[in-house]
Amino acid sequence: MNYYKVRFNCTPCSEDITDLLAAFLADYGYESFEPDDSGLTAYVQAAEFSENNIKEIVDDFPMNTAISYTSEFVESQNWNEEWEKHYFQPIVIAGEVVVHSSFHKNIPEAHYDILIDPKMAFGTGHHATTSQMMRYILDFEMQGKSVIDMGTGTGILAILCMMKGASSVTGIEIDPGAFDNALENAALNKQAVDFILGDASALEGLEPADIFLANINRNVITSDIERYSKKIKDGGVLLLSGFYSSDIPVIMESAAPLGFTIDKTSEEGDHWAAIRLIKKNF
Image 1 (cartoon, rainbow, N blue to C red):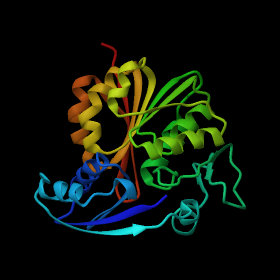
Image 2: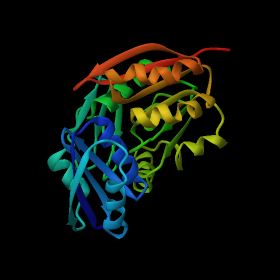
Image 3: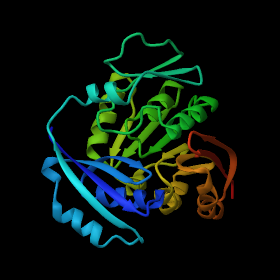
Image 4: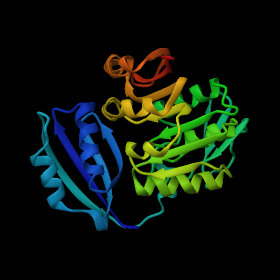
């Protein structure tokens, strides 16, 4: 499948700027994002690429930044090979989980063995946000628990929950490419995860869960946390990551009025944070 690789340079640049830019691009079919200190690199299928869409986003961007961009056509390639060469090597989390792909050899042994062929989807355990979420899952008694995984990506967190004995796991993913990849990865690991293609509105038809996962970003979390809350049982757990430690007070401004209290926080890498919240009984 052919793609366009579009590079956006933002002056000034911040996480809020790249998060918002990625959200706008996702509305136009962009599937993968690589933010950095000066901007964002984004990928979209060639059939979805439109200069007019980019100009509309740049011209109407609501934050104070100057955005320039360049685009490059990328011919169909073996994305697994690209991941192997540039990004993805086997990783062991907390001594208990090994994450690897079908192309890897000499795989370390661990209690939980997760096979992930990531393609264009995010979530291999290498990023500090994913690894922290996995550590929280490992620390928690999952046996017989119901789980919702919002923004499931490759499905890695949903798969680990099932391996730990969750009674049911529902993964929700807005991006069609990532959704297909999550289905493939669950099948590779022989785990019966129920995946739904959609955004937070897809929560409406679900029963409240014991555990709710969201490894997304601060802006999406604060926007949708009221919807999350309605789908968490009283006394249930909300595990969040995808943001920096400095964002925790902002998130709690939205979470505390809904009855959530902080049970645990952690930080890895470049101040990437994760928090475990408990929903109070009212």
